[in-house]
Length: 91
Image (cartoon, rainbow, N blue to C red; front, side):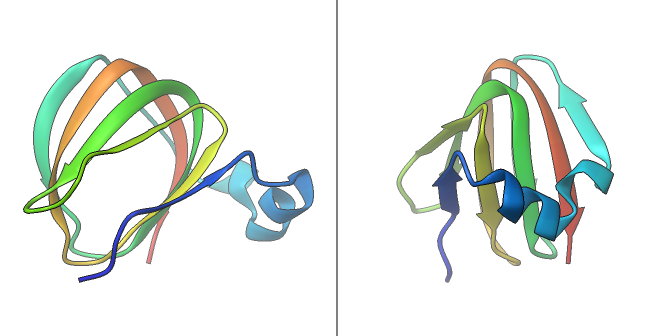
């Protein structure tokens, strides 16, 4: 199974090329919950701090300024440490 990939502080050019500013925005307060990705997600964190732990995997910390890719088929546990606001795209 593929891993979570995190790119810290991608260039403005890369964000423009991906069209991140046109993606929907998701917000969530500090909390914990299980999640299963039925398709690939790419997101860019505008606010917050999160630890995502894949089932049978190592925890991955992410937050403000991170461009993150979650692979299709991954099940995990989200632990939101600071309220999240992120742009996201599925597929």
